[in-house]
Amino acid sequence: MKKRFLSVLLCASMAAVSLAACSSGASSSTATTAAPQTTSAQAETTAKAEETTAKTTEASGEKLVVGFAQIGQESGWRDAETLSIQTYASENGDKVELLFADAQQKQENQIKAIKNFIEQGVDVIGLAPVVETGWDQVFAEAKEAGIPIILLDRRADVSEDLYATFIGSDFIEEGKMAAKEMAKLLGDSGKIVELEGTVGASAATDRKTGFDDEIKASYPGIEIVASQTGDFTRAQGKEVMESFLKSNKDIKGVYAHNDDMALGAIEAIKEAGLKPGEDIKIVSIDGVRGIFEAMAAGEANCTVECNPLLGPLLFETAAKLKAGQSVDKWVKSVDGVFTADMAAKVLPDRKY
Ligand code: AHR
Image 1 (cartoon, rainbow, N blue to C red):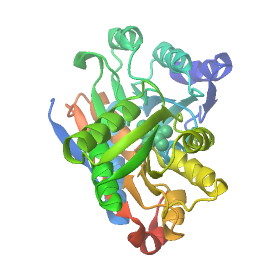
Image 2 (cartoon, protein in one colour):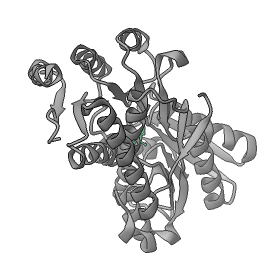
Image 3 (cartoon, rainbow, N blue to C red):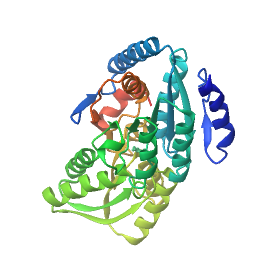
Image 4 (cartoon, rainbow, N blue to C red):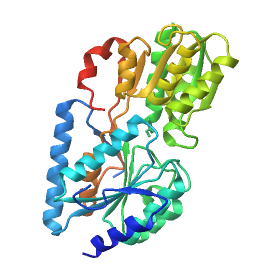
């Protein structure tokens, strides 16, 4: 009852943070692996999550209350993650309650949301940290209040005792996979440019490290001639690519830290009178529908899939934590590589 009353207060008090789904209806240090994105694996993950959340609700006699502080809506990938979380919550409204905050790309809004979740006494806090640093104090406050934190899809640079688990991909490995694909496409030589994600985000830092290190170590004929942030958005991906094209001659490839920026770059390349996918090869990360369409149209060459459908796993892990069970420190998503020749075949089955 107290939680319900406070939930109304939270909705009213967070003017700067857009909140949705504020009512139940609406809304060990080793690593385990999260299932890849086949339809049957996804259904299995959801069924397991429903079983675990049902057990926790039955044992405690109360719904599992999760507060989730989302980054914002910068990409198709993030929208898919949000939908996955909200869909699980609304389809399981008898077992779980979701308090959802959209921080509009601002760390200060995410911190505000976490503080409100603590005030409300939620069972578990979920967070996709917009940047890696600056979380120590608010995480310590959650720990003090006895509320575990689940890091979803991005890491935070804090000591391990301040969060319960990280659910997400190995971004360094994704960068390495992208580098190998780029090298294959270029026959191991040529000038390329890099569109980086949000400055300070683990997804951007690690995808750059993985890619750049692999190129340096294994492909001396490939030169990264320019690298700049496009903040994970299509609009900025396009803008930065326009300036890369003006100041660099003979670009043979674009590596984008996400598909949305790659899609922006494709527009810029076409407007410059060149053929994306042919004159300039495109390799990116995420696996959103738009890039599969571009690959099927011959305008992009490769994407490394990063699973955003993490809603069921978030709630399953939260239920385990509420029940006092131990969870692994890293629940690792399984990523895969998709090339243009596979696009038309897999497109109809893409879930996001
Ligand atoms: O943290 C995952 C990244 O964040 C996705 O690749 C990107 O599209 C999103 O915004």
